[in-house]
Amino acid sequence: MIPPIAKLLIPATISFIVGIILSPVLTHYLYKFKAWKKVGGKVALDGSEANEFNRLHGHGETKTPRMGGIVVWGSMFITTVGIALGARIFHYSQIAQLDFLTRSETWIPFFALMVGAVVGFVSDILDITFGGKGLALSKRLLIVFFLSAFIGWWFYAKLGVTAVDIPFANPFEIGVLIIPLFIFVSLCLYASGVIDGIDGLSGGVFASIFASYTIIAFAEGQFELAAFCATVVGGLLAFLWFNIPPARFYMSETGTMGITLAIAVVAFMSDNLVGGIGIAVLPIIGALLVATVVSNMLQVVWKRFFGKKLFRIAPLHHHFEAIGWPGTKVVMRYWVLSVIFAFAGVILALSVL
Image (cartoon, rainbow, N blue to C red; front, side, top):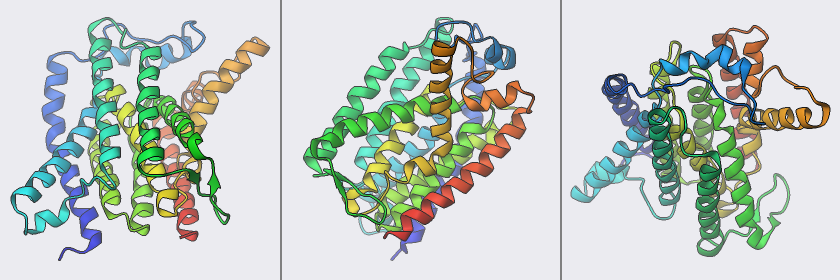
């Protein structure tokens, strides 16, 4: 009998190894087909030219391939499906004990991650093919909206989730409003995907978040969900191995869309459904994602009402670059903060179990 902790560590290790093997192959083809933007630079949220960003990163966008997120979801997919197929072929072997793809815990996050990855992949293909004009933001938001509406409905209608657990208090009943809440959380998390803006930044932050929910799910007895999160961590660490400066590739939409949607699902799976507080601790564990979204919002509002920018550039991590911090310093400090917030969120989550 394989101990529960091994059901986390073995898939995570396999995912990491698969990602390490996959990355050089992917890199070869990304460079061979020049899978980067043909025209560098971005426009600001208000439609004006993003001069500060283009000064800092516009040139690099035409030399570094996109779609590095394939390493994350590719290694996770190969590991998950490989173990599941092995379990069905060798029913009574130890492989079967490692199978964590179950309807009760992991079908929904697996579905969300893969659908987001495919949509993001299509957007990236369009981005590198048509001169930086990928799938329009409005269309991507619409896809996230409808996908999260469906998953939110599933939580409400199929799983009977009608409340959000509050730390040290009774569950807060919201009934059918659980659906718009899930939509809101998903859209906010997707908006935070722009944290994929400096070499090594997104991989470290996302790895800390999924590692946190690995611990939380394991403590709640959701061993399959914990294994899913750990497998994603393995893929993220493999991606990070090749994304540290100088990055071999960027995560881009095919990584961030699937990852952020999966975070939303995991947070709800580890909440009222099992008597945990997965949603309440999300703003703590994902504090840097919150800072990313809030800084963008503040920048838009400040320019709208005061006629000038609050930050040199938004989101916040680029502001630090603009005032003179080297990108590596920003990344290292974000990693430190992500670990601190992760520990704080995990400690709070475990204290109520």
